[in-house]
Image 1 (cartoon, rainbow, N blue to C red):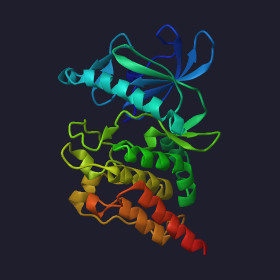
Image 2 (cartoon, rainbow, N blue to C red):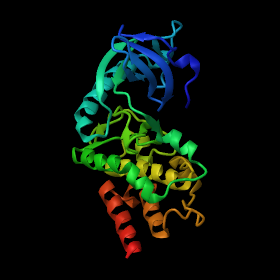
Image 3 (cartoon, helix red, strand yellow):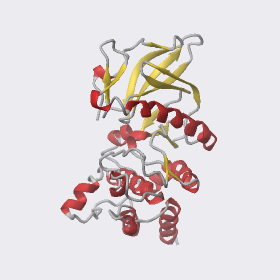
Image 4 (cartoon, rainbow, N blue to C red):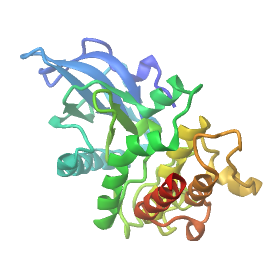
Length: 297
């Protein structure tokens, strides 16, 4: 869901007395992203503002974030999760899967992350630009390789991300490597009280409920949905609609930038029922690489 002008900070808004908003870049539904400038040094920065579209709006002053009245009691959890988000991001900075955090502060009834400036484009934007050409599976795997490696390490720590979507993936234009914009939705395998986050087309069935068992296979579905969109140019259908319609997912023979064998593996990663799905990122990578090697022999 795109933000309207009422929901974004105006150009030249100053935050913490140190940072100035220059222009709005986009949103992943949870955070607004802006180009900014550090007032003292005039250095360019990126400004991330917590703004979960499903529960807040902008106050009359143009800066204060106001939760919907019926969600006021839940909103403090958003701020707490923001602190946890930053903890995860700082922890995983050494994995080169997240941008460098320069500052974190609370203001305007929300929180902000000040990050290093680098030339980036969201995968969502990139897919819109390249919708007539699409990516080969090899190009897609190379681009997403840092994220896949990171997910393996995250899962080893008994954590899942739950928001692997084109809107949350950014591409460094200088290296062509992908990184994640935030870790707001991270939870451990056993946390049945975690908030439910749903992004149509990328969220697997078990993630629609607090009570269904989730694990590495949950992120596998989202990852495969992103890969599917990259190689076909088509966004995945909502998993609930797939279930209700009892439709069989296929990839058209006209899509030639992925082999038939690789298509089968990708579709296994998109199985509706977790027990029918590829269970780990490692398994997904190994199967796709094995097929690639066989084709090269």
